[in-house]
Image (cartoon, rainbow, N blue to C red; front, side):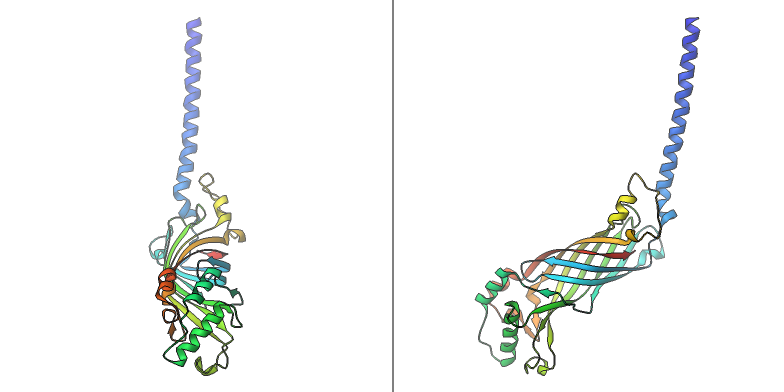
Length: 281
């Protein structure tokens, strides 16, 4: 009798274990299928990408930067896939803005010590003195900047894990020096502000969606709340290789204004910054 009870108990245990294993397998299989199908079922990546950064800031050893900016892109991968982003992108800032920009104190001090006071012509002399006054905040402040960079962007999971987007861009910017109206050596005195251009800059940027990151994680892969404004909120961190050696104001290069030792020290400014905005991609 005991032997029969033992066999019966063993059969019941095996049956229960088999049922549990099958249910667990079906559940795991469903999650796995949902995981695999997630990009198809919830794909939202667009052919046209845009990003409005209502605040950005960069810190370096030469001149900082802050303000607002817009970015645009064309997702070329959309022609053959709805799961990834391979895009041509551009940062565009046509309006310089109202944010004052102040060079670092060490940079200004060394610029003054290395400044060349004698020039071959009046135009270069006037331009150099305007730039020095602007760096020292003497009546000609630097307010705002223009930006144009272009490059490529990549995201393997644009609608999952926070939509991490990697970007590499190349281009230039112009720092706006004010208070030059009436100076006959600067555009015949017709303009109140003239940009000091810096070209040949590289930018490496990573962007992600914080709200989407916490809502669509590895655990909750199938959740999709379309139309939620917060999921468009993005945060970016970037490294910028500012080619300060290329800086030029009204046709006079910065290399003509200061000594070679100063240029060798500040020729490349490794700036780090962040951006906050809203994006569609």
